[in-house]
Amino acid sequence: MTLVANPPIEIPLEGLSVAQKWQVFEWLKSDLAVEEIGPQDWHFDVLAEREKRLASGETQLMELDDFITEMRRTMP
Image (cartoon, rainbow, N blue to C red; front, side, top):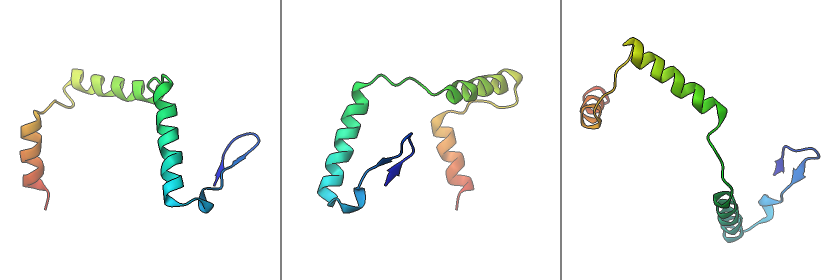
Protein backbone atom coordinates (compact mmCIF):
# COMPACT_ATOMS: atom_id res chain seq x y z
CA MET A 1 0.00 0.00 0.00
CA THR A 2 1.30 3.44 -0.88
CA LEU A 3 0.11 6.49 1.03
CA VAL A 4 -0.18 9.70 -0.93
CA ALA A 5 2.50 11.99 0.41
CA ASN A 6 5.52 13.88 -0.84
CA PRO A 7 7.47 11.67 -1.18
CA PRO A 8 5.02 8.72 -1.27
CA ILE A 9 5.15 6.44 1.76
CA GLU A 10 5.25 2.70 1.07
CA ILE A 11 3.62 0.49 3.72
CA PRO A 12 3.94 -3.25 3.04
CA LEU A 13 0.50 -4.23 4.37
CA GLU A 14 0.12 -7.01 1.82
CA GLY A 15 2.95 -8.93 3.50
CA LEU A 16 1.56 -8.69 7.02
CA SER A 17 -0.42 -11.40 8.75
CA VAL A 18 -3.95 -10.68 9.94
CA ALA A 19 -2.66 -10.42 13.51
CA GLN A 20 0.00 -7.91 12.44
CA LYS A 21 -2.58 -5.86 10.52
CA TRP A 22 -4.72 -5.73 13.67
CA GLN A 23 -1.68 -4.52 15.61
CA VAL A 24 -1.14 -1.74 13.06
CA PHE A 25 -4.84 -0.87 13.23
CA GLU A 26 -4.82 -0.72 17.04
CA TRP A 27 -1.68 1.42 17.03
CA LEU A 28 -3.16 3.87 14.51
CA LYS A 29 -6.43 4.03 16.46
CA SER A 30 -4.67 4.75 19.75
CA ASP A 31 -2.35 7.28 18.11
CA LEU A 32 -5.29 9.13 16.57
CA ALA A 33 -7.14 9.11 19.88
CA VAL A 34 -4.24 10.99 21.48
CA GLU A 35 -4.37 13.80 18.92
CA GLU A 36 -7.16 16.32 19.16
CA ILE A 37 -8.86 16.20 15.80
CA GLY A 38 -11.56 18.78 15.34
CA PRO A 39 -14.43 18.62 12.90
CA GLN A 40 -13.63 18.95 9.21
CA ASP A 41 -14.50 22.26 7.53
CA TRP A 42 -17.15 20.65 5.32
CA HIS A 43 -19.05 19.55 8.42
CA PHE A 44 -19.79 23.16 9.38
CA ASP A 45 -21.14 23.79 5.87
CA VAL A 46 -23.47 20.78 6.15
CA LEU A 47 -24.73 21.90 9.56
CA ALA A 48 -25.32 25.46 8.32
CA GLU A 49 -27.29 24.16 5.34
CA ARG A 50 -29.42 21.95 7.58
CA GLU A 51 -30.14 24.83 9.95
CA LYS A 52 -31.10 27.01 6.98
CA ARG A 53 -33.53 24.36 5.70
CA LEU A 54 -35.05 23.96 9.17
CA ALA A 55 -35.47 27.73 9.59
CA SER A 56 -37.13 28.10 6.17
CA GLY A 57 -39.54 25.24 6.84
CA GLU A 58 -38.16 23.29 3.88
CA THR A 59 -37.51 20.39 6.23
CA GLN A 60 -38.50 19.43 9.74
CA LEU A 61 -37.18 17.30 12.57
CA MET A 62 -38.73 13.94 13.33
CA GLU A 63 -38.79 11.96 16.56
CA LEU A 64 -36.68 8.81 16.38
CA ASP A 65 -39.64 6.52 17.07
CA ASP A 66 -41.62 8.20 14.27
CA PHE A 67 -38.66 7.84 11.93
CA ILE A 68 -38.34 4.12 12.68
CA THR A 69 -42.07 3.62 12.11
CA GLU A 70 -41.89 5.50 8.81
CA MET A 71 -38.85 3.53 7.66
CA ARG A 72 -40.53 0.22 8.47
CA ARG A 73 -43.61 1.34 6.56
CA THR A 74 -41.75 2.45 3.44
CA MET A 75 -38.86 -0.01 3.27
CA PRO A 76 -39.41 -3.54 1.95
